[in-house]
Length: 295
Ligand code: ADP
Image 1 (cartoon, rainbow, N blue to C red):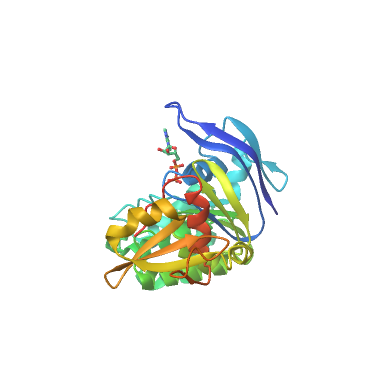
Image 2: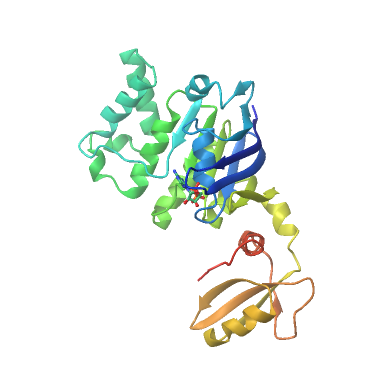
């Protein structure tokens, strides 16, 4: 099954054009949608999840017209929104059972089986009788994945899932998502480059409502090899460098500021060549469109 988005546009009533002619083809596996805050990722995710309409364009999932056959799409869709609220005084097991009921699984015994399998899968079986309010951020996210998986969805959308997770929780979450991506379309929307590096074999970068790059992350990185140069400077020199070179990122390292510059040739002898990474691709693409603020 394939998700095909063609020329999707959306302007909100306040005049903000959140999506401008977005076209993407998304296959089975983990797909990364990377972009800074305000890029339009959630607007796109909510439209694919049938929660809001577009002004123009089309989305098809297999034979389904996503913008029209909303009811049919919802049957095969799992959605983990950015703000996933939980009822704090309800146990994980009771809540999942309730959501399964809402999703149309009416047989009580079948529901019990599904809930038990899912709790195992997201590694929450041991806390199934604990109230959701006692869960850590990572546990809540894994609970969110469990509810998104009810009904064996063909398309799963996860919006900014690792924000606020500690490194161990993030790793556990990565493992869970990559398992799911083996036989489903999973769209991972994020502003964290590392999420995409670790998980996705296909991706797009979106900025100010437009798709500005897409493809395999390794191929995108290869296209930047030999063009990234690094130099350690004093913070006070920053403006001078910004004015003279295409600075794509800055990072504080041991009290000094390390800059990455993109250039086809060595800018001057004080710059060292560095191996390009996905961060360099990301920052160089978005710096062509907007001022990049990095740390
Ligand atoms: P992202 O998920 O990449 O942070 P969003 O899709 O949330 O981006 O937002 C894209 C742009 O649309 C932003 O400028 C945001 O302020 C604006 N926006 C998002 N939702 C609404 C809304 N319901 N009404 C008006 N503007 C919105």
